[in-house]
Image (cartoon, rainbow, N blue to C red; front, side, top):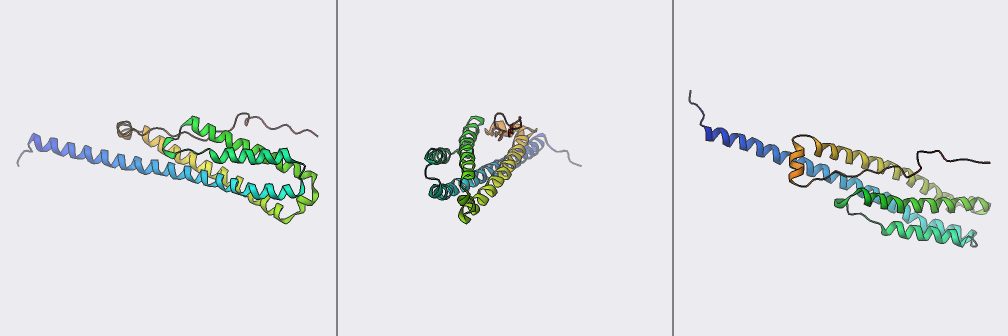
Length: 195
């Protein structure tokens, strides 16, 4: 039986390492694309909410014209929230925090708008308003679901780039951790209800 020469063994080892690196790289690219896709879906559901707001504001405006400050607040918060976009390839904790803050302001403004509708029984009975309110509630649920999916996808990716031997490939090619959505400040305390 012939002995394998050292150069053949070295070539075989290098080939195996190269195949492992290519496989790890391709896996990381796929995982990163999944994070980018999940982020796009998060933006998509936030856009759906932003698209519903003008119709809601116009419906309320017809009934509550003297609530001008609240209506302007919603329109202003919507404008600010829709201007805030993040390139999925540049997801940073700071960028997500700013995005969340803008969306939180919009949610707060919407809450005020919906609160003033209590003063207008005719508005609450309006079919357009009821339909828009139901769509907005559904959209808020979708936002929560998509944020959860994004966090799960980012967690899979982050775990992948930290595991050996992929961590070597990840550091060689600049794959970086993706941030997560976090609860807003004060969310750990239950709201106070007073009668």
